[in-house]
Length: 280
Picture 1 (cartoon, rainbow, N blue to C red):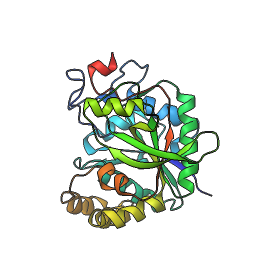
Picture 2 (spheres, rainbow, N blue to C red; picture 1 turned 30 degrees about the vertical axis):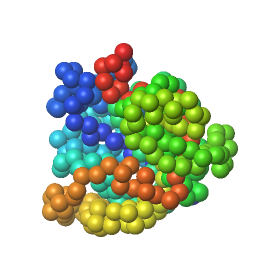
Picture 3 (cartoon, one colour; picture 1 turned 90 degrees about the horizontal axis):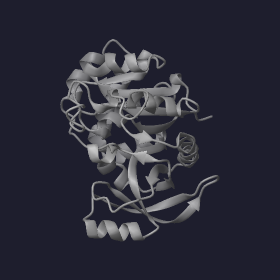
Picture 4 (spheres, rainbow, N blue to C red; picture 1 turned 45 degrees about the horizontal axis):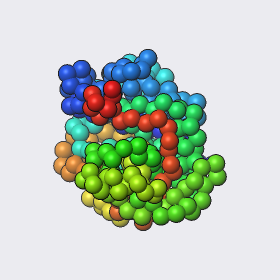
């Protein structure tokens, strides 16, 4: 049986929402229009379907104590620290390798620590539908129905329904990065474009295979680090190998070049709180 795990990405550098969000206290540690910090909100909205023992967080080494203070329910060994930020591809790759040593048949939902989601019940329903698709071998993205011709988001073009139980599962045709306003208006007028939320679900077997195929150098490095993670050699191996990793996003590195990607429409009241204007 494949269990669903959550990986909460909490490595933001505090460069947005200045001056409240700063380098020593980025926005994931702030309560911005929420009763708790955005990081804790991210944990609480998956807690009804994913227990803390199956929740992982990846963050900067210097924020480990802050994450543990925000999420005391999550086992300390599930909070992973990067020596320095190298983008989402190395972060996801490392977490996948660490988890593969514990549960190689796992499904992994990669989630954000700094977004607002109003309809949390629907969010969980979308996540479970995505997990079903991931168990079938797909890379399943959560796509947001555009509400404006926003030029700051990446867009996902879809090409028809291929399945789904309670919610539709749509085949991905292409990715369109941060279009001009004219193009964004065209996407908005169509019914087959979605904003890329940055949240997705896949099986460990799928992400490991795709990383070996598309990012072999990174795959080799994180596999070596992952093998040493729960051993006394971890710090030495991490220090030797992490510094040489090239920064890359998981979108460019894997998802946009993968062969089997689907979208589940996620009308969940989503906002990435990327600016003060977005927050207002």
